[in-house]
Length: 314
Image (cartoon, rainbow, N blue to C red; front, side):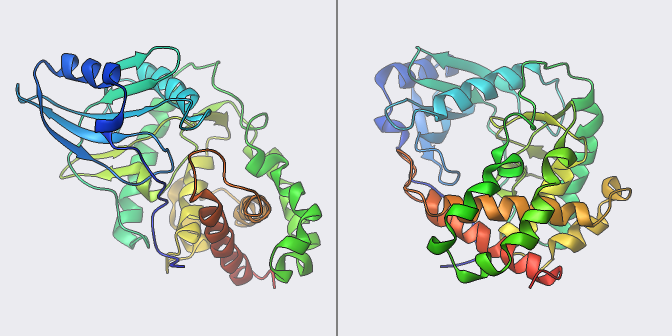
């Protein structure tokens, strides 16, 4: 199993989406669809595609129905709601239209030129990603979104998901049993660290960035949370480890000016709780429509384990 790859599920193609969804996209673009480019990447089982109509208008569409996965339509509803709150900003995507028939949900978003950064992360790409997060911090601070869940109430990867591992140690590599108590001692601090009221993207990964010529955009806003204002920057550092970068999470953490006041041990706390949760959940059956997620969790847990070992947990 390669350590250096973006998360990738199995998507339906846009041609297989319900007629009503395709007709809605066609009507919005004001002409017959002349080009449809299905996209890969991400874990959703629903279609994602770049569209061009005979009128010359373009858009990106993402959609899902509950028969593919019962959770994904709600994530799309959340994303539509937060995108509607975001101001015009070069580092933010622009929502064009929303389709929701009570079952299927679809979003039309501006078609962004560019591509996701490669993994493993390079130093230049990490700098660009950090610049995006820094530029967006004051923007997000100015948005009132009390409906967004608090991380302390809806982020089990850092709050209590890691406790599952204690009952599953016989199902994972013996390393987790040997280091369980040390990891748990760190993980117990995670809930306090993420506590806050600041609007956060919360899903900072390389495949949730589009790097373009003169414009870099943070995409996929379906996982938003409210928490401590530094967490998105820490999640960028964690993605170095999770994606298998040669640049360590600790190095990325230390290089970010927005984290200058943070204790480096805070990163170990977050990685320990996330690693334990991912290792535990890698023992579960895949949920509907997400056949690759178990292997992805296992890969992320293993890569976080390597980072934790480099931080002295052996």
